[in-house]
Image (cartoon, rainbow, N blue to C red; front, top):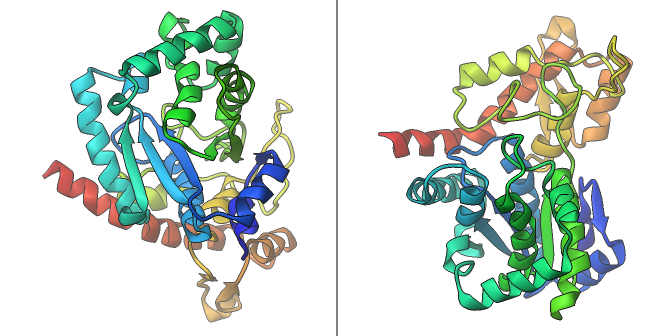
Length: 331
């Protein structure tokens, strides 16, 4: 797979494709970043963007992980000391998950976001941005229902982080799209380049296939899960024998989260997937790519229960090193 294919693999959107091709033509020395609010334990959302960072490392990019302690404080995620302690634990979990430690630069936001120059540039962006535009950018990532001044400043800081971290490519889930578009629109006003942006898909709700999986509500998967808990969650997951499920009784569009996890989590990390079955049910099935597995589920060759069993096996292998790291951190 060439650099462009690695950059764009499983991306929901790249802004813009021409910019991404230009980066792929000469990836040496190019920097990509994701920012994460320190939350204690990596969940499936963290892991999805981390998969993309791993692929970017393979493509030759330098990777920066922003452990956004100031952002977390603005989003009411705890005291500053608590957040910084959490950031240290998360860094260890990212390495356990598979990021190359010697190729990954971990940065606390407070290392540069409290400097005078940063503050002055932030104020310059504030002058260029309406309150309503900042609120719209923050709508999908804020905590709580009350709009605060901090939540209006938050997305402008995300935009400015791209400049101060000297990155060429900003990565995030689709919920970050409005923030990234705000960055592309406002950064030229302070004579900074608009970043190339890549957005990863959102995994649908594990139980229903409607909406997105959330670590704050509903059922989610994290490094904290024991093997037994993980298997129980996967076994209960919504998985009709189709890659394109019918809407639910209320007319809500649905996806198949089991297939999505295979596509966005398992196949990017494993070159081959083996679904183990007894000989009386046809024996094992081996897949070299996601499309073949999805087609077999559609046709009935692969039973949803067998797909879930294999998914639990591979997910457990992915999270086991991080689970062990969490247990060490808590001992």
